[in-house]
Length: 171
Image 1 (cartoon, rainbow, N blue to C red):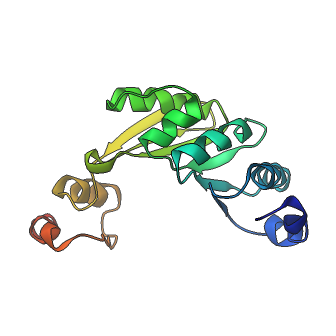
Image 2 (cartoon, rainbow, N blue to C red; image 1 turned 60 degrees about the horizontal axis):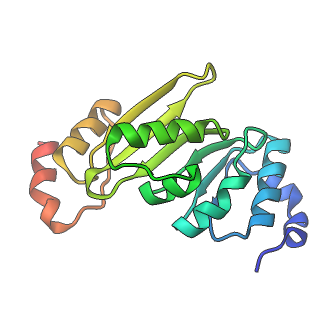
Image 3 (cartoon, rainbow, N blue to C red; image 1 turned 45 degrees about the horizontal axis):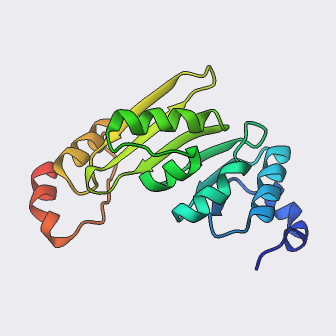
């Protein structure tokens, strides 16, 4: 089990990393210490809550004093973080993501299963933009990716069943 004492020996390494990625399986005390230390040293943080139970335990550590670059919950984990049910509509997910921005999180990427995902981003002026993305492998997802990054190589992990849609989108 990871402890703050163990992490203290890695201060120099943490302070010089480009990005700190935290997994929701890390216990609360080390997570809080890592968020505090990252904030003090200016290291951006990305967090994957990993489960509803762990998301609920993570929620108290999310504060504007401990800024997080990105949080990647699924819809149920998002509900655990905001402390209330989040209806399945895109509008409701976007509204809950706005709440999470108030906790000091810049980007909230909510994974929503077969309907895709919702990315809510807050800029330095506090303006929020929301993008609903189709599930990977769909023709619509590929079209949007190509529009955002023309000329870029896009690699998708798709099942064999997605091959026809992928072929049509890349034609």
